[in-house]
Length: 69
Image (cartoon, rainbow, N blue to C red; front, top):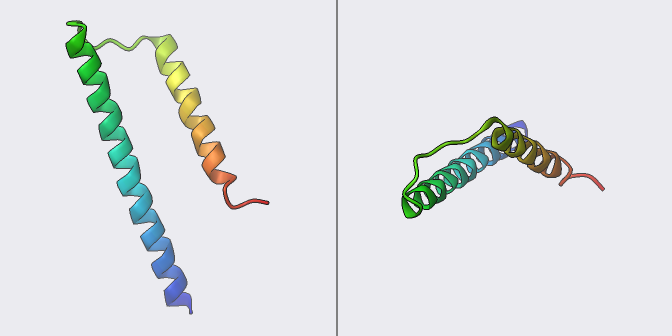
């Protein structure tokens, strides 16, 4: 029974890592596409960085609440 629980944890972590990597790659690809389309260099300011960080924290909070209720 303990082995089954460990397997479930490992599978969940691997799926989460794969999904996170795919989302990150997709976001980077879209950002590169936008900068190429606009013929601009890639620049992310402090304000955009803070917005992105808060967005990620909000997403993580939502994911953490999935198992509740």
